[in-house]
Amino acid sequence: MERRKLELAVISDVHLGTYGCHARELNRYLKSIDPEVLVLNGDIIDIWQFSKKYWPSTHMKVVRQILQLVQKGTKVYYITGNHDEMLRRFSGFEFGGISIVNKLVLKLDGKDAWFFHGDVFDVCMQHSRWLAKLGAVGYDTLILINRAVNWFSEKLGGGRISLSKKIKNGVKSAVSFIGDFEKTCIDLAASNRYSYVICGHIHQPAMKAVEGYETPITYLNSGDWVENLTSLEYNDGKWNIFHYDEHFTRGKEAKLEEEKEPGSGMLFEGLLHEFGLQATVK
Image (tube, rainbow, N blue to C red; front, side, top):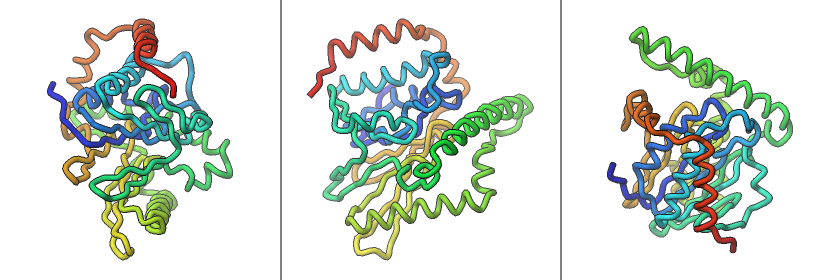
């Protein structure tokens, strides 16, 4: 497969280490792109729910695929989120072509783009951390149930549905939270004269041009790789939301990826080898 050249790609909310993560699909996406810059906008590894009992080889392959992009010259920024908040103590740390940061500002065609995960605006996260973690477990369980429902639905000739989306769209408080989250991000970006504000966290892919401010602002959200399977791409002065299901056939191509898949032990040894040869600490 020929890789698409991009100036910038943004992914977030991958949740490696959980049952809901679509690592196989993400691997296929990463193999299809050649970005100059890759921004990992939080919750890439789900440290909250991480367990030694569940770390499939496909999840390790995501890590290796990112390292291979670095090896080819891609600059990678890992922005910390709430599910990987343990990494926040390493903000400013760099190894190879990867930088760990809590927020990021990049110049895109002369305009300032502000990147951050978004959990800083989540009141539940700030004041009821235990409740947020409990909710994360419930969300992962809902995703598992959703997969079972979709399996039966497809066997019976029906289409795929998203239970979490139906809940989000049907509960007024959830709709209100998303609206408030977006407005807070936009208002803060406006006060700092940023042209773009790019977030993750709420698993809601979006691209909205907002008028009425001194500096026109575009709000963007990269979505997730649990239910939406989306990323943000920037090239030739234009933003685009990439939807996996619009470009790949999820079922057939996932099976092709499985055929000669190495075990976790082999992948881990390869990962250590890559670090030994390529990684340098500044």
